[in-house]
Image (cartoon, rainbow, N blue to C red; front, top):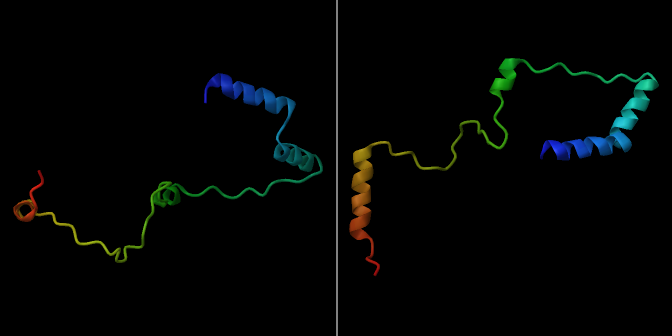
Length: 88
């Protein structure tokens, strides 16, 4: 969104305010005050998972154990290449 597009939206809202903003303004004139919730502590924010990332409890995911030995990986790849069908 560009600054010009945002300006057009704000101009539109000035002439046609969103309903929720109008209702809140009327409610405040009648004495209503929103219940403010305490902001979460910094440690709680840091402990939260980023949006779009799923975090598990550390249980079994059904995935094979990772192979971190480079020699084992090379041996496995050589075996796969030796038994792979030749495509032409």
